Length: 337
Image (cartoon, rainbow, N blue to C red; front, side, top):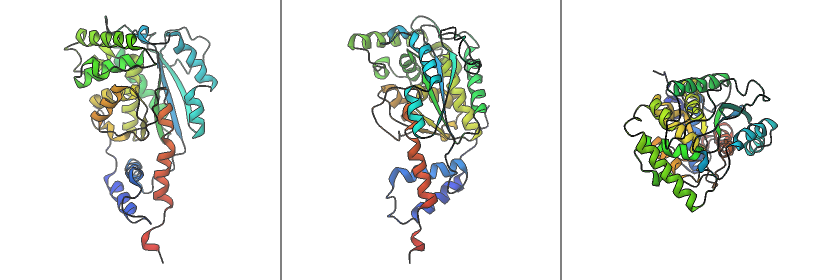
């Protein structure tokens, strides 16, 4: 259904050959060399193009299981205003690497009449169903949200690197359910503490996800049916964003548990799209580890972060730039006098 290009194997081979000829022992720069070759393949040139235009899109929405969180769902709408004011965690961290931050209200449960129209231009609905007792979305909404995410990627197509961020109280519970259903895992293996619930809260959260998996059993093989039963509009939009970025040949830095869950679904919809993604960092949520293993991705950073928003992935941008620099600026052994 989707024409996903293959990163240029000739450029990758040329990058590896040049890396072996640089003024250093073979393989001495470790993971940087792997990333440099990946970027060369993505750009189809050695060295890769400069990574000047980095863009974060924060997909915002509320979730019906938000009662399981340590924070009320009203925080989601309040955080949209914080993003717009440039005062969120990802705003601050993105500024350090020169990245731009955009927030898209896909399913925030609020009026939001006072925010710019561009924020709500792709809105699908308000909130989602509580997945332990009902489907998250109505028929057709998962595809509509997926298409909204594709449209957003097209709007950001001039970027050198795209980063999907997220904001939504209750999203780690929803992601755990999607990852469990995608990979055939029990709730107890994928549920984490999210925003910081206590032991009793973790038990309630695990029970709710187990109930969601039982309720949706037999209906999640199709990725859109999975999104409808267990996901959310903002997760479906993120999946569409990831697929369209791959179709456009734009490198993507995945963030934490949310983009990991979306990536699993996106890969099912468009096999091969995962070749255009890197994992920016390792989340503390267990479901992300399962998702990344299934996708064959190894996180670049491991800082113990659990904020979301794209905040972990933006901190991997300097590593990508360093990987490019070794190909662009290091000397060759053959040129030594």
